[in-house]
Length: 114
Image (cartoon, rainbow, N blue to C red; front, side):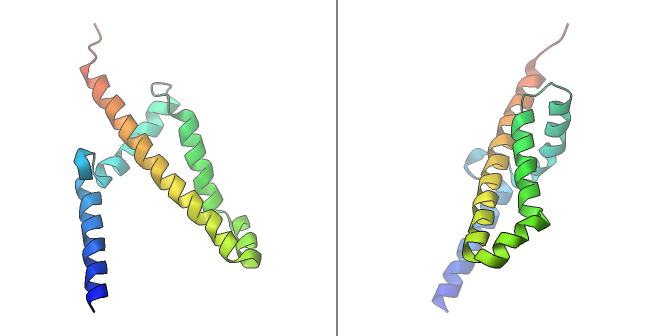
């Protein structure tokens, strides 16, 4: 029972940290809302995140691809481990890139075009 309470408290703290933007960073909802703007600025050539966005899209396609089911069917743990590594990398990349984009976006607000 005590383990369950500790686990519940840990997940609750994690959820609060993600939603409030732990350590002064942007909240998860702010980051998610920035993704379409980041994609739009990248396609227009205003933001230099095109290659990173392409890598994130490729990682997402890899994880969701039905072809990836074949290694998981035969290799079980190894097949799932590659997905776990890819999802962990993808989560970190999205967090880092959205923070970088939001910082870039704040800098754009300070630029005055004559």
